[in-house]
Length: 196
Image 1: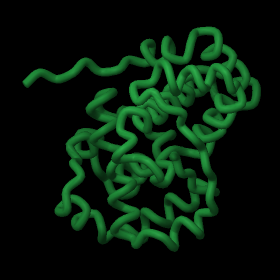
Image 2 (image 1 turned 90 degrees about the vertical axis):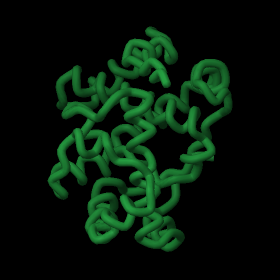
Image 3 (image 1 turned 45 degrees about the vertical axis):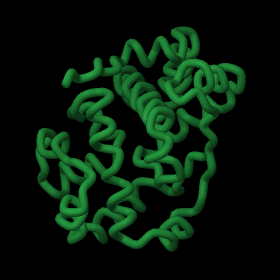
Image 4 (image 1 turned 60 degrees about the vertical axis):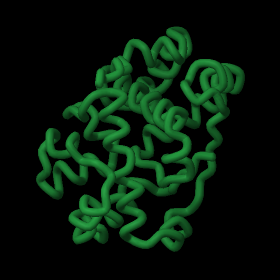
């Protein structure tokens, strides 16, 4: 069995278009005290998020946003560029459908799934990300809430995180820390975001 080629940051930039990519980076670079390279990585991780939602809509639709608020703000900016965003979603991303954005209060989201389900949903992103883009690296940690939590709070290496698969035993193993995960996610993200 051959492994499909991974999607490079340059390929994601090409999906968005160099002009819009540069516009988004320049806009957020002007709003941030972070180095430009950090902002470029934020835009890349936002595009990775959108790519995953598009490609794996059946598995990821309606789940809690697994990335930091800054990534969500980039998504908001892209949505406001309505023509380019529609073309990105419907013509260039693999699912070829418009990715809708819907914010709900974290408290409302928290009432829906139980802790085990919330944890399973958070962990669902990891193997899909690794298959499409390769394993998480240090540069991705500031942008993906659950991955940073697993690495910094739970002591998992990036290799251990890359090896995670969505199984009941993995969920059961991690359930012991579900309360801490929920707390970490809540403190990192003011709202939950559902994709339709």
